[in-house]
Length: 553
Image (tube, rainbow, N blue to C red; front, top):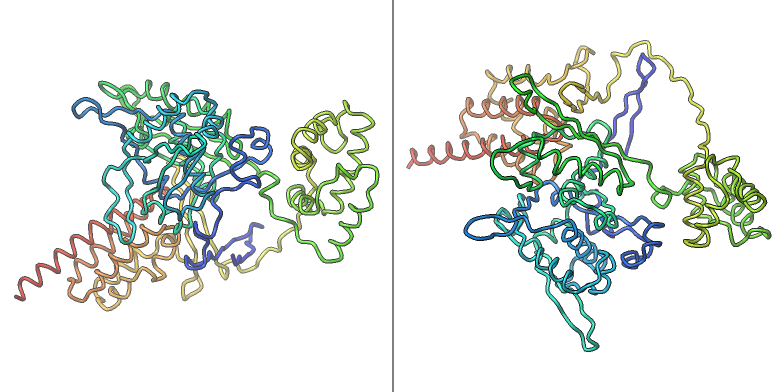
């Protein structure tokens, strides 16, 4: 992505990133969807899974717009039958569908593999988990071209048994075509640690974890989530009897989720804060989740660039290693390690050779370049999981190469620069990105300066119609953060508002309401606000056009 760096007077730098257009972005069909060198073998091999740390890609639409309802019991009573293990089986089946090719009509997973992944022994227990998937109703709140709104209640999955001629049992299942389209066409997704799901002790962890993983993958200003207790209860399907009591909710869900995340998730850390408002009993105003990603594992690091001469020198050094040839990492692994540690690939190889010599001579002594690590630990991984796991573990403890920071020149005329500003209110958790541009006279436009421009449109209907374009620069600062469904709602509303038959007052009402709502929205609620405002005003303006057409008849 093109990046523009502009120095500021205070020594800091404006960073402006021009994102790729949606036509040029990778979608689900461009990605494998399951990230592991060994494929499905990691489901049944804990040691290999621990070394490779496999992840599966889950589209943001399936995370943000999925609501688990439960199973219908006697009468209209809803029972939440989906347990943590049942959710782990669901994630296993969906990950297997990506491995086998999500475009296929039917997928098969060995019952033995499923039991080993879940840590269970009996077919009866596996059957009960399959029944959970069959009986659990869910609701997806998004639109898919060619399908009616997926807002009706549908089963989470429809699995069944198949027994082949040899008597081996398989779980057979299919995926709804609308869900397939979401997986194949969306570009915004989260990486989920598939091997963590069977370890969760609380069923609400499996429902909240994907949302936290989605937040962890976002840019720094957006790694928080502010939600009311009532909204969170609805999102994760927390069930209670009588009046809602936050203490019971925190004890029965939040604290258990926090413990599961701390114990089993390696890609990020998460914590929550309970914010109360003044009043009798200090009622809870909202819950603030703050997520911080950890450093990506070695296998996910980019390979450091290397010239042809440098590559030849690196391979020659590996080829002519006689003493510890079987303990040498590959050139590709060294390049990934170079990105992680800051050393050159050849420099990193020399440090590894030096440490290997020390480990053989003094296996119980801490290594000079990797504190708190001994040769026994590295050799244990080397013999059990191979050189990749041993080298990755060593790189994680290796002291990073010091980075030399050069001072940035100070500008004499900062008003001639432009860039991106992130406004953050630590009290409310409000965060939004604003692209600053220059006015004609060289001064900055303040945040949300389009309010003044909207006032000017009251007497200029032609310009107001020009503003009824989702691609207009006035809306650029938030339009870039919308996903497919949200952007579609904005484009539809703008197209109707640009209709000359719409009254000027009605058009201004829409533009002014959109501007005010977007300004007040939190970053994580931006898409919902745009969809709500555009949906309501689209209905209002269409009714206005219908009334005009009736009068003309």
